[in-house]
Image: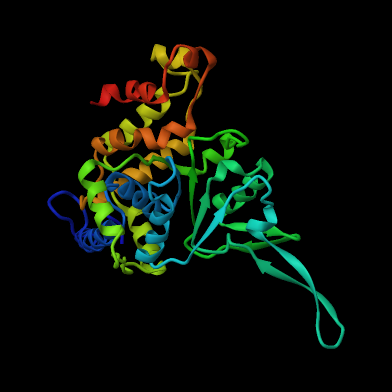
Length: 338
């Protein structure tokens, strides 16, 4: 049944869709509460990560060690009912260590045959810890998995479990011996999420809760099927023309070839492509659902512009020499919408 055929609420949203949004909102509230029992003082990070997963995408978490990035991924796997694996990226990590490999086996009759042993990528949530410490060859092993949800091994294409998400972490410190992620792989991440230090009250609560005899545990709220249903619901959420115009205005203004913003023309080496517009659209819809709203607004565009665009743009040498940051450039892109 099309939207025009369905009965609608006063806001123009079909009643059956509004009911589904309300039910999902209650479940998301429960999921956030469960995650909050384990992760303290990272509300924005939790919401952005949930936004990524509801959008069906991957996230790049950037922060110094000890801020709970790994624990967050493990907790998300529990709350969302997904099986998760963790890979510690190191310079000597090989693609086969992630994807898996074929081994030659001999049975009791002496017959030999190859058997494929699945690597850790065959899961629903893959924690790629310190992804920038692996070589480009190993980093590229994730490209097909992230984009196509399948891997090619020994001439065969093997599908990955559904849903499939990569939550990668990157340490901004100790960059000696690291390999910057290529632009093609960065673009596969829906959001780049900065993980900062908790506030004073949150760190106090964390200190008391995690150094005692017992610790809080998260419980499953979703299953793989219900999460995929939620991802489909995100794509059904109606988006107003003013929000679409805002998304296009922000993304297109970040391209130095066509931008009318002097700072972009002078300081940006390359701007965001069409995938940025798609990511911003999906993320705005997911953020509205998390907040229990029936449709996204321009405020969602403003809130998500930085995590969507930050890793899809690059500054030139002149900008770096003058101390210009990407965040300040993105603020200029959003200024007309404020």
